Image 1 (cartoon, helix red, strand yellow):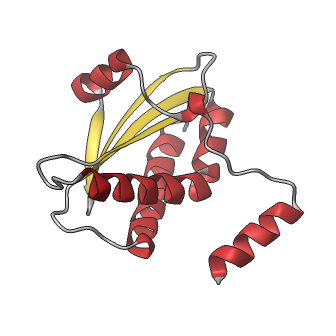
Image 2 (spheres, helix red, strand yellow):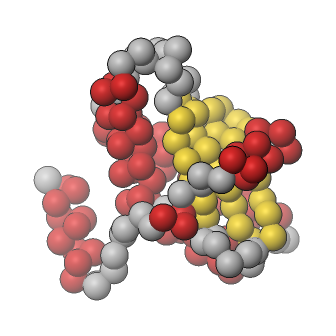
Length: 144
C-alpha cells in the first residue's frame, strides 16, 4: 500500500526513479579497485564496500549487488535477492546521490549479501536505507 502511494506521489512530481546503465558498477577494473583499495563496513545482511573516486563522465553513484553462489546454489534465489536489492536501492538513493553531486565526487559501492537465509523485501529495504544513510554521513563528513 505505501509503495503504491509512494509511486503515485512521485509520478505527480514528474520524477523518474529509473536505474540507468551508467549507474551500475560493472567494469572489471572498477570492481577490482573497489576490492583492493576500497573501505568496508557491515550492516547485516550486507557487507558494504565503498570507494570514492574523482568525478568523471559517469554517474555520481555506481552500484552493484553480489549474492554469493556458495550461499545460494540456485540462480533463481540469487536473482530474486539481487532484484530486491536493486529495487530498494533505486527507490532510496536520491539523498546520497545529491551529496555526491554537491561534492563533485563519484562513489562506487557494492552490497555483498552475507546472510545464509533469504530475507523479505521489507527487511532488505530497511537495511539498504540504513546503509545509504551511513554512506551519506561518511561522505558528508569528508567535505567538512
